[in-house]
Length: 262
Image 1: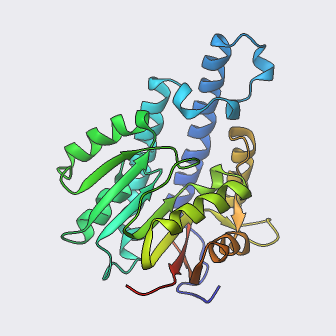
Image 2: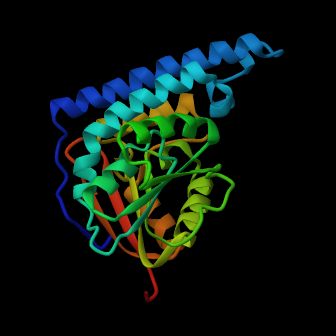
Image 3: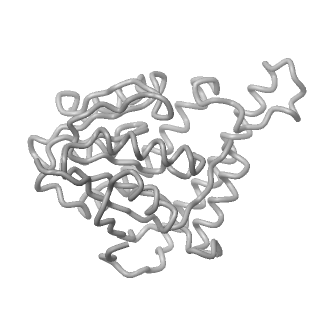
């Protein structure tokens, strides 16, 4: 990494409660999805893990509750995250797996004329539309349906935002996703990852280590990753000048710039 804008600092008590909320909520909704899927499955419940149940098969009740909870947390953190990013040359933002659109909407609020796109699964976007419309931002936040694990992400973006995404994927899945993200960028555009980043020994910080356990039981191949791992995926995809910024609530931003001329 080239530099760090902020030194590591311990998250405050509010951040601790936020992370505890995420862990408990994720466990509860995961168990609910497992039991719901097991009731419909022909195989014995013990053989069907939570991670084997795709998001689009977990039911509307599960999805509504999950997106609402993530929206609550994202709305608390989005202003500080967006404020930490230089939007001077940014006019189009792609929020990959953007859920409720909380971050996309905050980008739009932060800069007049900026337009954002939320890219997510169709059953998620039915909820996103309601959040965006209630915020009065439907004219500046567009919705594009797709699967970020398989589909092209579009083109012409100045900033691609991956928040709380890489911890759900395998290393190979993240390499492929970041490559697609870079392909969607304009020359000199930036890709930003926000996630829990663990130290190189994978023994801390506590939030990241605990979240890794949650990913172990709740996803097919997810984990929390180190700065060097994520940084390597970014440079392999063609990003340079990767900079780390630590937030006050336990997450880290890794920002890299695509080579080229505008």
